[in-house]
Amino acid sequence: MKVFKFGGASVKDAASVKNLAQILKHYADKNTVVIVSAMGKMTNAFEGLIDNYLNNSSDLEASIMAIQQYHHTIASDLFSDLNHPIFKAIQTHFDALTSILNTNDSTDFDFVYDQIIGFGELLSTTIVSAYLNDFGVENKWLDVRDFIKTDSNYRRATVDWEVTTRLIEPLQSVSSMVVTQGFLGSHTKHTTTLGREGSDYSAAIFAYGLHAESVTIWKDVPGVLNADPRHFLEAQLLEQLSYREAIELAFYGASVIHPKTLQPLQQKGIPLFVKSFLNPEAKGTKVQAENGNTPQIPCYIVKKNQLLIGLTSLDFSYIVEENISDIFNILHLFKMKVDLIQNSAISFSVCVEDGFHNIEQVVKHFQIKYKVTLVKNVSLYTVRHYNAEAIALIEKNKDILLKQRTQDTVQIVTI
Ligand code: ADP
Ligand code: ASP
Ligand code: MG
Image 1 (tube, rainbow, N blue to C red):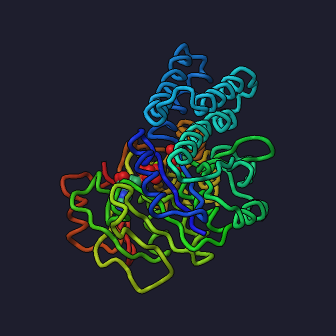
Image 2 (tube, helix red, strand yellow):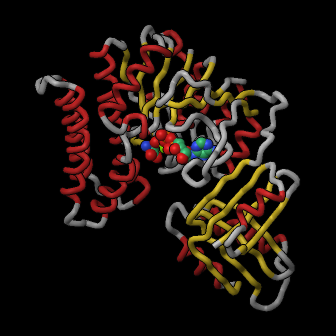
Image 3 (cartoon, rainbow, N blue to C red):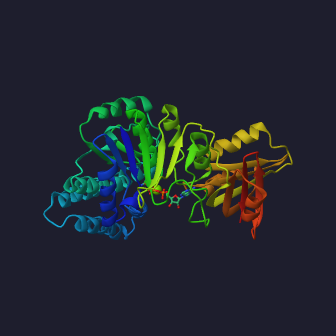
């Protein structure tokens, strides 16, 4: 079996959905499981809706309408018959959403977020699946929440591999193509999510459970490049990568592959293809077991909007194991993603990503024991397989706040 994954950019409008259908017609068959994300930037739009809902904002109605309009436009462009059952199916999702908004009594942000955000994927797959069936690419729509089971850590749920694998394995004998949602899972009867951009990971979870022959993630770039083309001109395609190298790139923030995607694939030796949905004939990147192919060119990764926290002990005492473990406990408690640490005798610097907007609370906790400095909006550059020229390129015209170098990798925090 094969697993294909299509992200938001590949289903952002009717023309994109038609393009996806062409790709499936040529490259997929009944043994393909197709994972689809929310359309375009709809997950961000749902995040706006959730904020409006929880803050009792008068903009709530408008945010629902905008999302409804967006899906309606795509559906109307795809289905000329306004009596097509798809319009009722879409309405059913909006009715379910309204019902949740009206009956929910939880104030737990993460829980409420997951119950609402998943409608992006539900709507998208409903539209895509119906269009494919009309187009002649026969498929079965499945609710991924019946297959991916997780714990109750809403917004960052951990997969229960044993149960999930047991549920996915029987899909090997399904007689038609399957279309299902990325990003979502469930705990008891509630929706959970695997973290933003988590649909690549969903594809890997299915591939693992299905013992798939390959996973292909279809992107708006030619494959994995040696830099994000949005930030670096003349980025070059990396045709072959080992799991090890790809894990390192994803870990440091090369957002073309979600960092959790590679481990399940590596475990079963399932190759990952990263291909362009704009140019499906092109080769793209193949990620597979070690093949001696380390990139021969520097690979650049940039993470913008990071925070640099500096801690100095108030009484000139050393920062040693005990304090460091305290510091990490606090960072973990507030779900900070640690990118880089550096310590000296009485000071400790850490560059973090504050995905859950907890920095104020973190600073308050640190201030009990330390003098705290905070620099917001720093950029963290990582260069794998660096050389002097690559470092000079990053440092040009910038203030360097911190720098760390190992044999393979240099990391530079700039403002
Ligand atoms: P999806 O549609 O699956 O959600 P993403 O937008 O998350 O896709 O990922 C594709 C984007 O990743 C590209 O548009 C590109 O800007 C970015 N990107 C970051 N680093 C790289 C890299 N090293 N190679 C290719 N693309 C990269
Ligand atoms: N739709 C989700 C997001 O935008 C998941 C994904 O696309 O990977 O984060
Ligand atoms: Mg994405």
